[in-house]
Length: 540
Image (cartoon, rainbow, N blue to C red; front, side, top):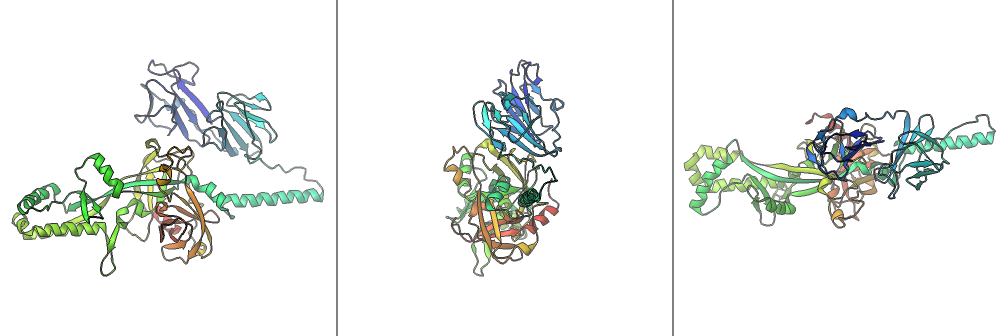
């Protein structure tokens, strides 16, 4: 970890010679993970990332190569050190007041990213200071940005705040004095067995309890938000030209026969709502009632790829309003098609005189209503519902087979939204064998079943929006596409990952029989379909 101060003052790490730049304009933090954070320090003329001004005092993730500007001076990335090579270390812990640190401490003298503990492969432990107010080891202040060897018994203080590392750092076990008595050998053997057992549990090859599963995966899960509408078309014909003719018919008959381009369905009045030409405020009010939704997704790569349900990526496919007399489900799309076909048919007499009988028949046959996604975005676990915390996304791969209710989405900036955000390594942590889908097997799921409701009840919650984890068991024999389980959840959890007791992804939650949180009769799409989805070509 390294802190780089940028400004006009000669004490800054990067000095910018411009009167428009403040003395201390901004700070860039290079994290141990390789992530880069920039923060404007209350500058007069602002800090800009990709020509968008960032808020003072609010850290923002950037990537090497991004266009960054301090007032009128553009950042030269050659001045920023390359990521530190941490291959010699087997564990790294950040210490500071920011919640992204593995070891979080508070105090007015504690820096957000105060210090770093590194456990070397040589079984030596080092402490590195990055702070403003310093770090002491056994009462002696250590030099900044210089590794200092420490022991488990060392007294550590960050900015005057005592830090107990004994139970927060995985201290290496050094096996020495091999030529000991049998009793000592037995103790060592016992320790080795314990160590192997612990490793077994932590690696995902052994059983994990609910607490361990939640700790491992909760920061990979995000809440998704979407907006969609229905778009009406008639072949390749210009809808505006068609509506000019239909307007004439409407005036002549005193009935509206026009067909808007963009609509929503009013389930109460059983009529479409024309949203083609209404104000933004009206549109928001309407979408609040019928065109918005929330769900869950989980990251599977550091490039911002995430898995969710198909009905989150293409909600219109599952927008069912009833059934025919034969029991066939009727979608809103089909209902709208029939509605507008009847409109055209009702104006047949006059329309025939304009288009001709043959062309009119062709027009009616080409009428089509398709769902269109206006917007999809996410909020990370632990973030408050704030415009600055919303990350826009795009759908990369989503089919039309409603049985395979999964889709691939990616953040627009092709990166994880926060430093704290993690991802499920589906290469090593996914189980596609159906041997694990037997009745009675323990499962665990994490998601946002309450959607925004849990957050809006307490919008000032300093912990932000929190994911909900729930354990259960497989309760129904698997079918071709899914398996049944009883971990309690509701609608907003659609797209939640489902893990087995070994920490392996075995499915994606997609449906339930009850909306009661206390009763769980749910279904998950098998993980093998996630694998198939990822193997298909998709948008880049």
